[in-house]
Length: 91
Image 1 (cartoon, rainbow, N blue to C red):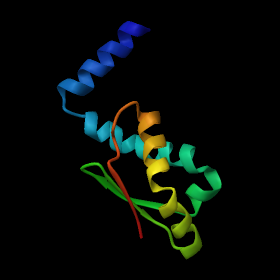
Image 2: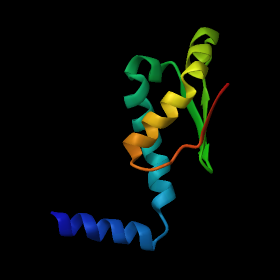
Image 3: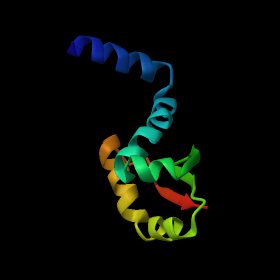
């Protein structure tokens, strides 16, 4: 099984799809970090160049998430196994 995993990693890297794969994993990481209920109350708008933009329609939740911004960024990066997210912007 390890050989298959290595083959897939090499294929993804050779096609320069690493960034797209990371981008596709962001919603999973977000839900794992904030929980299903809060993830359902937010919307990931974009993830480009290390900046994650999240729409939070309720002001109290937006304030809470802003206070936890660094903790959330570190948690996502820990799950990703690399410095994937440099900044999180809540609107």
